[in-house]
Length: 122
Image (tube, rainbow, N blue to C red; front, side, top):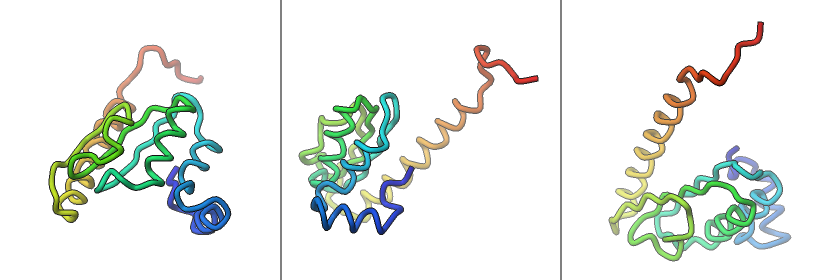
């Protein structure tokens, strides 16, 4: 689920609760224990990302943070973090895009592997 996909939800939440809460409120509404939250911030200081991670931790979601520079205030808040130690925003974003594609490939490989615990419906 892409938490940035619904412009109406983002603006309504931002107007009513503040833009620092646009992702955290969705995490609280839709996140279930065991889900995974992936956040991306080049500075590591985005208040809406920090709030989302905090909400995910309370809801016992797995958290992955793609951060830039030194990780900012988000460093150490997520269970897994990948920090691109650059001060150039474009390079951080390029590296984040590469990392996202790599994560997707790994997940797809694991997801598509036969699992002896699964049973086929016949």
